[in-house]
Image (tube, rainbow, N blue to C red):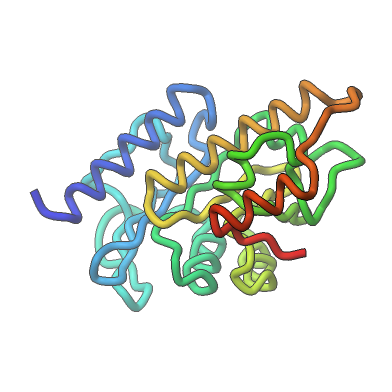
Length: 216
């Protein structure tokens, strides 16, 4: 089995897992993975994470030209912005997961650090998550908003829309975006309750021990 065939199968496997557990429904969400030759494999537009066909994934060459498969997601500017600004990005995942979207609607959410420091794993896997303003889906300005972060964030939350995470590979990106959704759910459960969050020294220890990107 070729490395690209394995990548195609992995994309469909992880996407279906996210779909089956209700983390993105209908034909929402999109996923992309960097190939060995510098190209991209991308979920096609209008497709369901639960029914992706590995043979119909959009295939881009290293110059960003579509060379095979169906038409790609309209969120390509978003994906490309992560690849262009983060040299470590091997995969990008975007969901419409319910709890993270709900948290983005709250009036008191911290735009610079979207997730409150409730658990160590959200910090370890995501660093700080930037809350971006609302854009119409597919708007190229979403990509420009990501580029304005200059590669300093591996995860962003699109207000009223959904989270986006870049990881070293598709498994890491999917694990991280699940952690984002779980932490958002926990934040909503604790909303209105004076939660005992991680202290600054505890956060600093995590950032240092696990080499987390954590710009102040």
